[in-house]
Length: 475
Ligand code: ZN
Image (cartoon, rainbow, N blue to C red; front, side, top):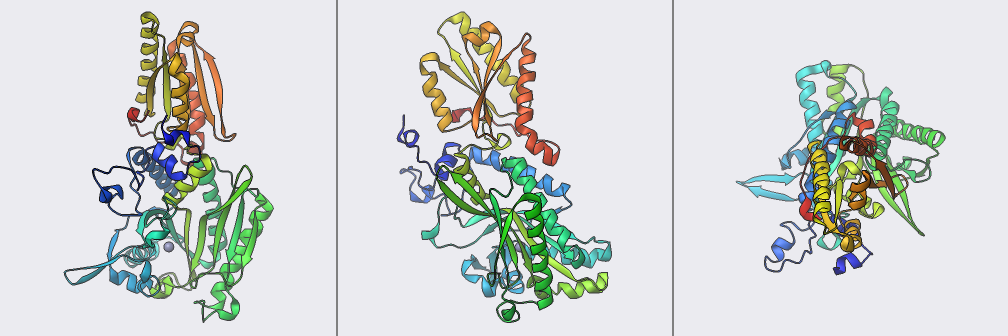
């Protein structure tokens, strides 16, 4: 057994490495050297074979979810002329965190945020389609951004220089602000519960409201007193609503708002035996800066008449990379079934008796083929009775398949299935047995278990995407 498996004090990067999600920056590949070891950009995660599948499934779920909730889906370039960020003001107040460069005498920036592009798209649509464009306008992107962080502060997936935001901007008339931010909470709850089995309730979530200091509005906090008042009152209203409906508590930090508007952050408390950790997850932020910079107030008034609008930035998982890191620590490397690189492992326990083993192999392959043909990422692990416990332990400390199916002499003789199913709510595995007559019944039974494991995602987007992959070499 390698040192890595023996050591049970794993970090999120060990889990990510075990699952083949990302390549560890410190992978020991001396022949290729430091440049390769750092994977071409220190602090910019590379999603590997398992990670590619994980990202593809997650992206599909998130894109469809947002489309179903009335967001427009866009994809904006990584590189922009720096003039976009001059207009947005980022070059004034965010320059130290930006990657900037010159080519052919032109200045370019790698986008640190998606917002300016989203506003630009809104401006383009409104110029072209005038008031046919509906308000509230909701625009979503899995937006890849890059921000410079000092190399000393980088840490695994938790502190990186390149990441993907589940980023949306909402341009809403004033009279709908309250409904919008309430719907944002409901959407966030659906995502956390549907995809990650993370309940959003008073016992594990609290809200931090970062507000202005009214005396400093117009000085340190930009925008009008009226704007701050409307936004902050609506945030408090949401806090009260969540308190009475979900037992979620909120607290206000006066003077802690960003200069451009108040915000609400969701903080999740994760209890691990005696240790309690707090993670900042989703955020909802008002912005009184960008609409002024892009002259949005004037344009909207010209087109929709006397309408006061508000811009809200929101991200539910924040950075998908950071969220993955947090989740891996929380779940000890156990990804939800729909996102797991290897979803099902069939453990074929060979006996050394030729006639028995022939049946074990044939049945294992029948199951694997049937499940693979349904798009489920299924692999067979051939083992023997004497090696079984070592092989299962290796599986359970590395790949962590949510569903294991054991096929041995007993199962063949008695025509039954032995399953080990990970129960995400209880956070432990459960054993199940099922006797069958025709082998098609065995498949039906396994598919019922799969349905249950996919039900959270199906509930929020009406289906559960299955992207096939043969990652058997990871076993
Ligand atoms: Zn934004």
